[in-house]
Length: 314
Image (tube, rainbow, N blue to C red; front, side, top):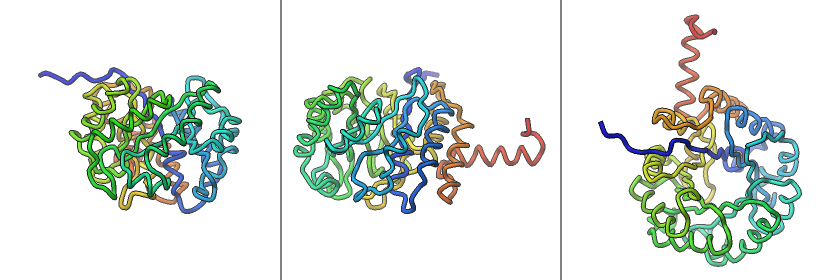
C-alpha cells in the first residue's frame, strides 16, 4: 500500500489562553489563565499564545495581560507569543518580553473593515512600525492571515487575495504567517489553494495552518495541509474560542483532536495526549461546560469505564 509522505514531526501552537478565552462572557480569573499555560506546557506544548495587548475597552477579557505574562513560569524550549494590535500594545508587551508577537490582516476587505475599521492596505501600513520595532528588539513576528478561504460578508475568498496579503506581510518584515480559515467554511482543496498562494512569498517552513470546525472540515483541512508539507498548526485545547466578527463560527479545532490525528499518522508531536485531554477537561470545568473535543470526551469516557471495571486504576 502506497502511503502519503508527511512531515516526521509537527509543532502545535495552542491558542486557548488568548484566542480561546478572549470571547468568554464571564471574566476568567488571572490565576486560571496562568494555570492553563502551565498545564499546557506540562503536557508537552512548545508554543503557546498567551494573551493580547488590546484595549480593555474592546476585549476586557485580556485586560490582565501583564499579570498573566509575569505570573507564568517559563520553561526552556517553549515559545510564548502575544497579539499586539498597534504600537501602544507592542510597547506594553515589550516590558513583558514575549518570544514572539502576532500581527494580523484579513484577505477580505469587508472583514478588515468590520474587524478593525480600515482597509487591508491600511492595516498593513499600521503594522509596519510595530513589526519594525519588534524586530529591532529581537522579538520574532508572526502574521495571522484571516479569512483566507471564506468571509462571512464576501463569501469565497480567491487565492489571489491571499497571495497579495502574504506579499504585504512579507514586505513589512513578518517572518512567518498563519493561513487561517477564520469561519471554518474551507474544504481541503480550498485550503491547499490558499497555502499554494502563500508559497509565492513564504517557504513551507514559515507557513502554519489555523482551522475552525464550523462545517466539520478542520481535521480534513489539517490533513490537506500536511500533504503539502506544513508542519506547524494552531489549535485550541478543548476547542475553545470563536470569532466575534464571524457569525455562526465555532471554535478553533481542538488540540486533542489534532494530536490524535497526528499520532495516528505516526507523526511526532512531543505531546502527551492523555495529559492534554485532562487539561481540556480542567479548563472546560473552570468555564462551566464540557470539553468540545471529541477525542477528549472519548478518552475521558474510556478512562471512566476502565476505572469502574477496576482495569484503569494503575
